[in-house]
Amino acid sequence: MASAAVAGHSNMKSSHLASLTPQWMNSEVLTGTSIMAVEFDGGVVVGADSRTSMGTYVSNRVTDKLTRVTDRIYCCRSGSAADTQAIADIVSSHMEILEVKLGEPPLVQVAANTFKEICYNYRDMLMAGIIVAGWDKSKGGQVYTIPLGGMMVRQPIAIGGSGSTYVWGHIDAAYQPNMNQEETVDFVRKTLTLALTRDGSSGGVVRVAVITKDGVDRRVFLHNELPEFYQG
Amino acid sequence: MSILNYNGGCVVAMKGKNCVAIACDLRFGVQSQTITTDFERVFELGPQLYIGLPGLATDTQTVYQRLQFRIKMYEMREGRRMKPQTLMAMAQNLLYERRFGPYFVEPVIAGLHPSTKEPYICALDLIGCPCEPADFVVSGTCSESLYGMCETTWREDMEPEDLFECISQSLVNAFDRDALSGWGAVVHIIEHDKVTTRYLKCRQD
Image 1 (tube, each protein chain N blue to C red):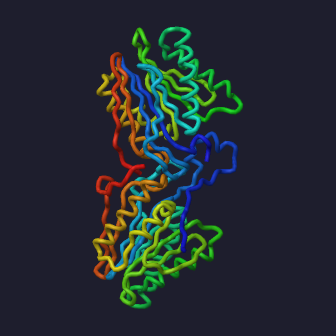
Image 2: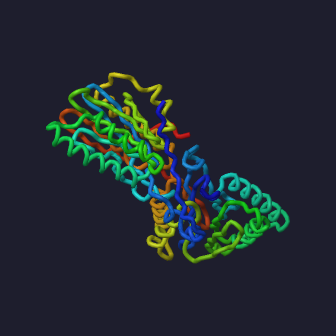
Image 3: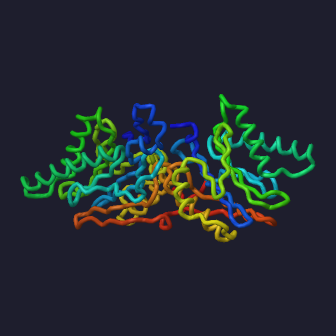
């Protein structure tokens, strides 16, 4: 089972003076996070929380972790913010060149494979857990997950980030194939709410993007628009 | 991760006009995982005497229980209620007894003198060094954010209603920037004749 749990950790500078400065000044910026993507007939729904942390300090509470690769391909980023931003930029520029050469939008599988090549070949230097999702005319809506280490596999539903550990059971129990678009958006919203309630490294708003042949529909769910569950 | 950041949590106390306020968040977690959202870390030790114990949760419970015991023995022997300054000295002694294997809590005390009703706040570090400022004290995993919030919002001689607004906003906006604190808050406003306790429903993330 593809596992993409990323726990936040800090890169302490190797100096005794590091203890005199607040923890957030010596911590790499991470998106310990909750991300997911689900295929449905006609496209995909991608979703993520919006918390970026430096150590335990929340440096951005409205982050956009759903990054455009092409007009119909998005990726969800978890792990090191710097690593995933750099990789997404590189893949996006490759896809732009490819679109000119092919004369048509690139396939989701090609974008996912490009992500995989970078994540696998530089696996010792990177900390990146990425979910690639989009629509193309050959296979419709597709979701590919690329966890730490750089394997790539297509799945109808993929979850990732540190918050995903809390919702594996929920998706096993609640996911049904052949949901329509609105049911899928609702399922993503519910799953991410459960994850960000339990995970300290996830929080903020729930961002969702629906990708179909007609384009990308982006939505934001604020905390008062999220479902309420049992508070243990 | 430092031991003081293992469970997460924060406490703030402020002085007002003939009143004090003390507030804490309600999260209990193990590093990034949230376990419950009803873990209070501010305890009543007397009719107008409260202590907040942010830090390692097991030591929160133990220090509270040991202090309660010492206070009850004091009240039995002395036949009178303890004043806040004495509680500070008692907490200082309890913590310094463990100088080389300390309790991982950094207490915050808020209360009114039993007879003069003079407001009093203080904070101690984990080995008992006290600090008695005139305005507010903060402690916990988001103390830097709390310092910033309190510094900008606190004014001298606030009435109880204003003090409630001030301490609530300071606490909530500070722990919204901390991954290890939040998930609800409780605020106690301590006046000479009553204590008002309010639970704040906040964003659960």
